[in-house]
Amino acid sequence: MYWEKELETLDRNALEKLQLERLTKSLRQAVNAPCYGQIPEINNVIKSGLKSIEQIRELPFTSKEDLRNGFPWGFLSADKREVVRLHSSSGTTGNPTVVYHNRHDLESWANLMARSIFSAGVRDTDVFQNICGYGLFTGGLGFQYGVEKLGCLSIPAGAGNSLRQIKLMRDFGTSVAHAIPSYLGRLFDVFKDEGLDPRKDTRLHTLVIGAEPHTEEHRQRIEELFGVKAYNSFGLSEMNGPGVAFECTEQDGLHIWEDAYVVEIIDPITLQPVAMGEIGELVMTTLDRQAMPLLRYRTRDLTRFIPGACKCGRTHRRLDRIAGRSDDMFIIKGCNVFPMQIEGILLKLPEVGDDYRIILDTMDDQDEMIIEVEVKKEWFNGDLAFLNNLERHITRLVRDEVLVRPLIKLVEPGSIPKSEGKAVRVFDHRQNKI
Ligand code: ADP
Ligand code: ZN
Image (cartoon, rainbow, N blue to C red; front, side, top):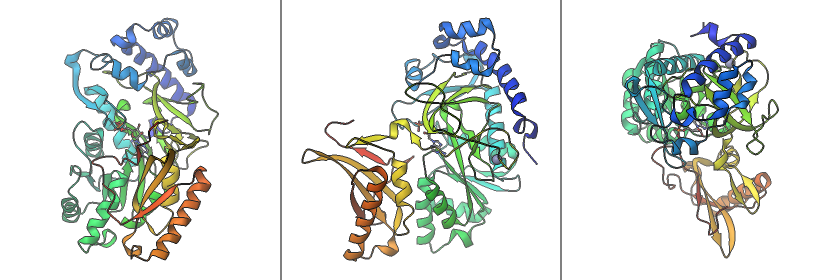
């Protein structure tokens, strides 16, 4: 049983035909926006007509910078009277950007969301608790409308207040919850402090986790702590928010909905498509948005297509877990490092807790990478020999992976300050930032 079986299992030819039709319509709509209307390449493509989806490469890219330059109305393609909602990004990497929706856009987004959570095995018999900010951030309302469309009993719990979250879960028999992964370790600690075990004292069977980079190791920890299956949800406000790509019950990559987006993966330097299966920057074009179509939007997220077909029968291609944003990467002592490489090492170790942070600093004229690592409560007993050994062990593992010797600082559980929303992992205090 599928939510939108026909669309989700279209063969490649039919899917591309649909994309071509929708892209043609989107381009006509897009040129109503002041920032797109004057671009000759777009008008040329419209004039000569699209014959294949590859022709999308004749169009210019749209960057986050372009969106900021066009703030606030430059990318609006519809009459203001038609627009019924705006959302903006969390602003993790600078000034936020804004996206407008008309009624059609909101309906289309709700369908994509319903389809996504259905693909992860959620049904109308489930009680769905959305532990997520309801405001400009898209995770709140995005999930809300999708969950209602699917027909679950929804609990719009909002973010934070762990005691209340636990009470809601227990009072109403929550079976599915959505939250950012970095919050779930904290929520588990509150369960423990209350003398409760989510495996026994709740009816949770599924968690949906997303909105920030996390590793397979992190997912496995969450699954173990809560006794659930955890599914990866990917999205970005510029492409609506959640519901862009989602893991199905096979847990083998995230189906990216190709009836709603044209998806490219490019080499961020040459701007050419990478070979199938290679990692590059995700570039997306909306196909079903009217108030604000976006063309070849450079997401800065790094990922790859997973080659081959998925066992679930859906034909939309799968993305691999996001390796990070191109601007998360930092260079230290000439080596390129992604925070997720470090997380992958740390969270494999049973002694290590869920939180860590990477501090880049200049000490005696030398740049250093200091990694603060929380040690799990049960292991943090002041035994210095044990801690020294663990420190040495982590130093070696990190050095072998990223080729830079880090300074590892083991700290007590709970001592690393928590960020409000998405986890911030890297703090760069160097004199000359690279
Ligand atoms: P901001 O860019 O300010 O964080 P958004 O809330 O729109 O604003 O966040 C979208 C970004 O969050 C994505 O571009 C991506 O970098 C990250 N993200 C979202 N979901 C995931 C996920 N499942 N895995 C990794 N990163 C994710
Ligand atoms: Zn699948």
